[in-house]
Image (cartoon, rainbow, N blue to C red; front, side):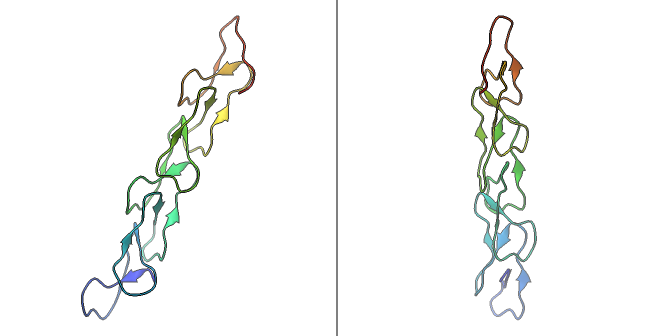
Length: 124
């Protein structure tokens, strides 16, 4: 597992490169599917993208952090946008609700702003 022979009649196997895997049995190395990756040679399975990260292409050797204002759970192929009234920092796995007296006025906020004078807002 984790190695493959690319040549017919080859007498030895090479390690599968990063971004690919190979289970037991004959056959070539396979690109890791979207939302998974391998960062080491010779892997027999791909790793799931961790919360707060994503993998958008097959055959990836690394994850990408979600940008501020977005989030992801495990095995994501993209990041979701935080809704109005919430925010997130880079690499967050969930959006946080704005505290009472502050809000985000648009989707995808990286921070909350204080409510203008003469207005108020409860938590969330």
